[in-house]
Image 1 (cartoon, each protein chain N blue to C red):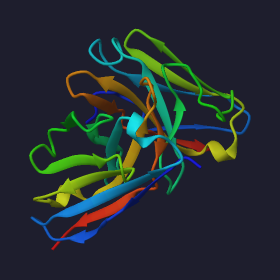
Image 2: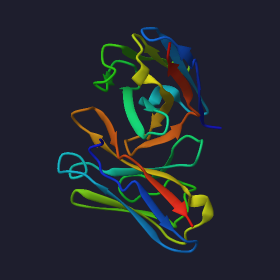
Image 3: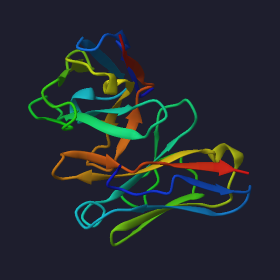
Length: 119
Length: 110
């Protein structure tokens, strides 16, 4: 079965750090661009970051640039999001998502990991 | 405030046809293809329509998408209670190197 499973969410104080992981299975992980998308409580979807298939190219939304780092380990079929200097406004469910081969949207999503930033 | 504008809510009765709009500009919808996602309560989003009007395998043909100029539309025919969900349009933003999402439309089946 093709699936993505996130882990690593939790409660962290403002200014703290957290690393999310997204384990892929059922497909050739190293062939796909991968993304992180977040959703604050009761709000809409917001793109966070993307990484190309071999990890050589990364992009970020302005709101997280300089604080978050996306990476991947193709040998472990795992995507990561290192989040530093966390703020209250980073509180959200974080989804990893696979970009459809050749473009055309995100066809596989993880179940989401909740990140709460609060003192 | 998203760069893609969707109505916050829509509603219909079982069997009815409903349409959800997504309005953008020449720099987003006008120059790239549109995707639609369905998010059922408490679950992750699901790709519903890609490349303006293509359905992934397993998506019923009751769902259809279209695009004209700087606007796109999702239509659902034969509305069913299980269609009650949030619907989001999205389009690739070349300057962002990522997608932008609409604000979402909450569909209620009366």
